[in-house]
Length: 127
Image 1 (cartoon, rainbow, N blue to C red):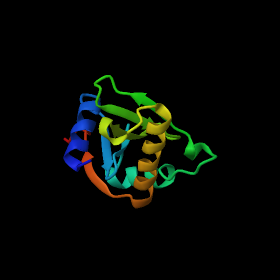
Image 2 (cartoon, rainbow, N blue to C red; image 1 turned 180 degrees about the vertical axis):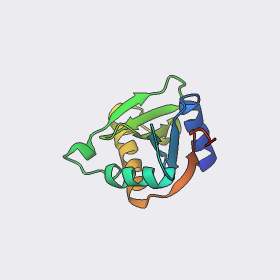
Image 3 (cartoon, rainbow, N blue to C red; image 1 turned 90 degrees about the vertical axis):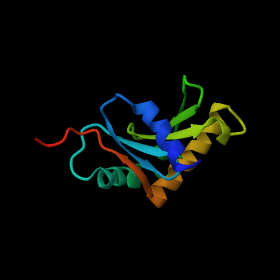
């Protein structure tokens, strides 16, 4: 999936939330509730720790949320602010297990490669 499509999907998902977020190459997004300092640095710290999947422990767990928009799924993991987008055309099997495993593998890649492709800063500018 190309970067502009991913950015558009996350903007639709988080639009109006007032939250800052950082997007990684394979579709994983780290949402930052009350960030301080450089957003990409903080998000990368979180993803470095909570991105790589280790089957058999909490890092291997996932939950699949079907988007009401019909454009795909969100796959969550063991950190509430780390979420991966899986588009409809990315999984041949629309079952939650197959989608979840695919999303977890995307999160794992992002957690190991740590390649930021977009930063959305929702913080108010300093006066």
